[in-house]
Amino acid sequence: MLKPFKYKTRRIGIPEYHNGVNRIGIAETLVGTVQGKSASDLEERMSRAFDKMKVPYEFRARISSSAMGTQRLTKAISNLPGELEIDHLVNDGVIIPVQIDGEISHFMTPFQKLQDEEKTDAINEFGQVMGWHEVIRVPYVELKTQEDADDVARRILNGFYIPTHVK
Image (cartoon, rainbow, N blue to C red; front, side, top):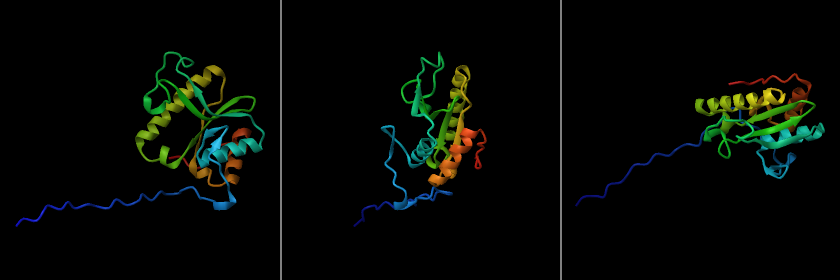
């Protein structure tokens, strides 16, 4: 009598992320929202830093395709067709678009890096017409703690921000 065929399965290991963000535990209480919108821990830390400095900003500001003219964005970097989202649109006399680059969403594949570059170029093109500062991209490794986020916000607003980790 023949035995039924038994498929061999492989266990897929949990990926180990390098230079991951330190989780502070109970010393840091994050609520997961900023200005009533869902936020990651990194986005919330950055928002708290801008709040401490009493700098007005809009969280998850959107640029519509109609504002950008005839330019159409790929679906990969848009929310609604042709719409573009900016993590923090800071108003410190000059408008400063700040993008937070989390480890999983921005550092895993070359394709994601290409998407980020296209999105940055589109925001810069629109912002140049409006008199904005160029996009500032903050990598996750610089936002491990609230103190780190406070330091990054201070350097952004003082015009001295240069990412320490660029992939």
